[in-house]
Image 1: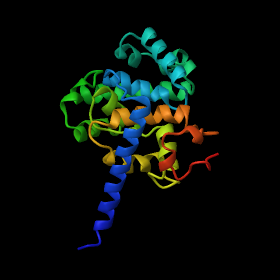
Image 2 (image 1 turned 120 degrees about the horizontal axis):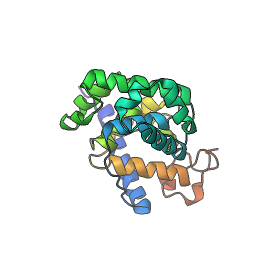
Image 3 (image 1 turned 45 degrees about the vertical axis):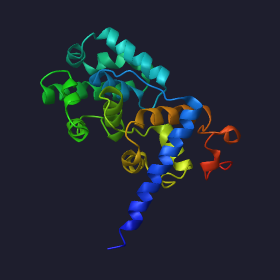
Length: 230
């Protein structure tokens, strides 16, 4: 009966570490907020953000909305028309087909081009409604839940994944999906948005992929990789 105690202690330790990291980052960057958006807009924006910069994906999304004022019109257009519009976002051929299929799948499931009904559902039920949509994996679902629906979720993007491994929060070779499974349940309620945004900012400004600025890092004392990351 005593053997299961070790995993429970490990989980508590991860929760405590994440709370400490959230506090330290908030001391440096504050507690950022972000206005809630439309869930279907957020879904499409997240697909466009894959494997490109925020600037490029934002430009592609604005171009898409300008060319197709409603998602119905985008779904009725040929994927090639979408591809031309979102070319600035990179991987336009793949993303245009994914968005086209995604919009049609939402219409088939929800009866309209709208995911607003998910706001009324508990987080598990809302996430379940997103499972299986074309191009929608754990990170994309978490983005919609957190940013658009204001539900408790914790997206693991490139920056969060890198920091989680460097900080020893997850095993060094963990995939983003594995890191998500470990981190999401351990993030304190009400702190997911600020922790996610602050980790991204810290990853861009300090704990960069190449030549991280360990000397000026507010998390240096808690980082087992300090001074060793390439």
